[in-house]
Image (cartoon, rainbow, N blue to C red; front, side, top):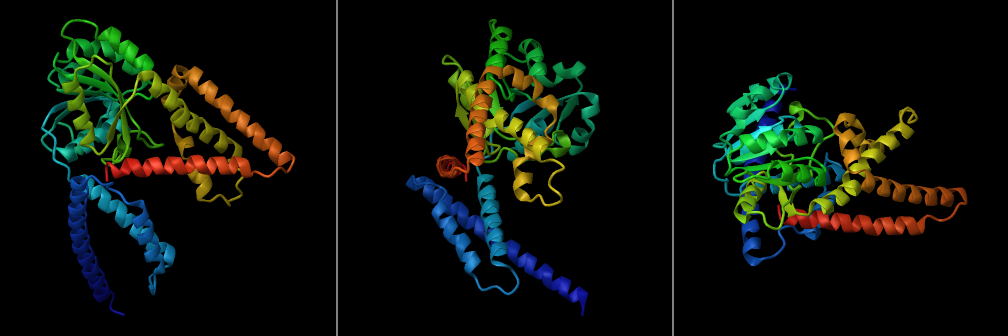
Length: 380
């Protein structure tokens, strides 16, 4: 068997597949533009299901039906992502990112990918800067003592630090950032941050501050885990006040959309009530489930447990202040959860059919999936 010849054939096939993929992306881009012009949904979930089923039904010699479907699913996702990145590049801007961990590092990668001419400055502790230094993403990097140098010329400042540090830095940023600049944060609670910002930025010619929160992340933190695609097809919440300058809000919104996110406007209170249920509660559930099931799997745990406990890998220091800030909302949701667990416990104990709980959960899950599809239709 001539291994070299076989490898050459593999390389030839790979090259042909890449050419075909390039053609596929071009056609998908044309279809997307035609759909936009016609005002029809960009994503057709029904057609995608037909495509996946047709892949399963193909008569293939080596790929199993599920593998063929997985390949086509990955192909659809890759095509959507590639088409989305073909949006017009934003205008070059001077951007300062304070905190270059997972979110700040991912933001730097995504911004440079969207517009290589952005001038990006970063600020973080010296021990957290080595990875950022070798990345080539930043035009300058400063430790906190030199942070003024990073923000004094910025058009936009992203404050990507934990809650307590964010509140601590707001008065300094209000003084150091140019008056025409925009300042925003990424903290997972908004009422306390917005209130602190209103106090810090409450003087004539203060920069414009608006609270923000990208609904994106990973269980592992740090710049080494940053990802340029972290924000693609994700919601990025902004919490403006009624009197906020529309031109600056739109400018920030366009910049955020350039990294693939979808901007959604909410009040700080509305945001916090929603986050208690969809972010903080799942985090605590994941920890509790891992503590319950850990070391009891006997080597039999499958994808379900891994998927449901992914958040249990999160570091506690990211959540301590957040849970305190959302204490009333989170306690209320924990009590709701306990009531459902009690109902299910009694149903299991008395061998009662679980249909009503499962049926209701199925309906709610279907609504959640429908919203996810609708969101991706607007950002293919």
